[in-house]
Image 1: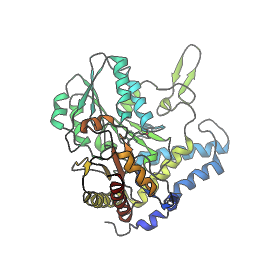
Image 2 (image 1 turned 30 degrees about the horizontal axis):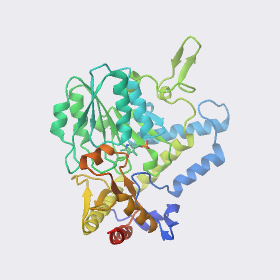
Image 3 (image 1 turned 180 degrees about the vertical axis):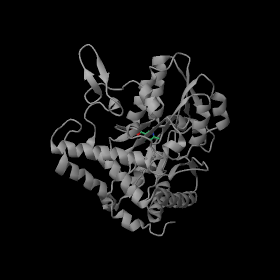
Image 4 (image 1 turned 90 degrees about the vertical axis):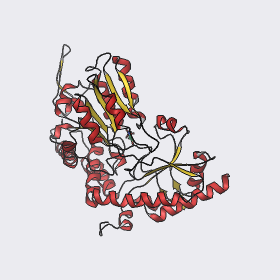
Length: 407
Ligand SMILES: *Cc1c(COP(=O)(O)O)cnc(C)c1O
């Protein structure tokens, strides 16, 4: 553990962590749904609206230029963080859902009936539904990489699904429901061997793992700012230049055009071809501030500390009678999905809420995983670097109390 990591001082950066819920100090364990925002990022948002709010890329006036400079600087910060070769390979979007839909829509023009695309069994609905819609439009066929009871993908089965018919493979880097870290380097390399492109949904990985786009040699990678200390409604699509050039624009409008007449419109260069309309300017700038904040602590330090929390919580929760953890992959981020035999996750979640503990209950936008385990849902506790072992003790006591009340 890095000696300079001091969780009490980090917690002071997050105003929301000192509030109470139902008369109890907030214990926020729903980080896989959205993370909390440090004062440093809140300040950037306030500064934007207080001092230089203006539309970008089109004004001659000072505020517009200032906003444009900050927005393009943010693109560079994001580019550097993910080791992306070219700034115009960073497309600002409203988040992972938007990023995936952009690519799925673009592939309508590139697929033919009978082509195959491969998804993993571990996906969030936003990395399933856009591809099903793509299959309906094109006649392409969706194949699924199966998983085992630990929540790990079966790589031999994946190998067997691949063929020259495979055009695209999409998979998350980390599962939001179970926390499994998928072997994406292997998934990418094998897909490339048959000439298929790969999209990795990085929404759940980016808060914990600093992914290197050039080293991964991935074709598309998606990130949502709100899961890594940034604001909602902002994210990116990373795309290799050659692929972004092949895809048609997603939305038509201002900013994405070179020239418009009623006879014909030509499109702007990257990245603007995919950035129609006024974007979430403040959001993009705040996303970069969130990356700066987390980099200041260090992604390695964050991962090590979160791993400590994961081990401690796993150990403590398993002392509870009849508690079962779903997702026991060797490589996991700090997510624990669990149930108590005979009790409904929602009832336990409601009692935890009364105690100030925020967890998620339900299918976590990943119904196929719940179907695999034949359960309606789980209780999911997901930890961030600003959480503590004391908070985990409160969770464990709360679960025991709920069990006593409900049994
Ligand atoms: C949160 C999440 C999404 C959806 O992200 P949005 O920000 O809601 O668009 C997709 N995939 C995974 C793995 C996620 O965790």
